[in-house]
Length: 77
Image (cartoon, rainbow, N blue to C red; front, top):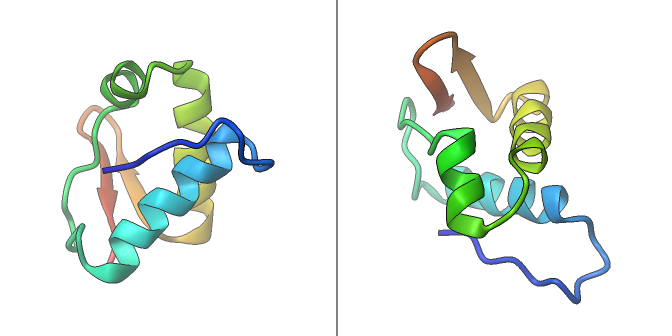
């Protein structure tokens, strides 16, 4: 799904943000598809959940995803 390059000069949250944006734009994530939870993705990538949350917050601000309290985050069209 998302691969991280620790030698990349970009911060980890930007790599996550770019990876998710690419999945949404290319159609790998369809409209209203549920994204992994912050904790699940953080555990999968072995990074701090705050890093995932920052990426999700920025994607939501840019209009790529939306959040439903108690349900999770979803891809927009």
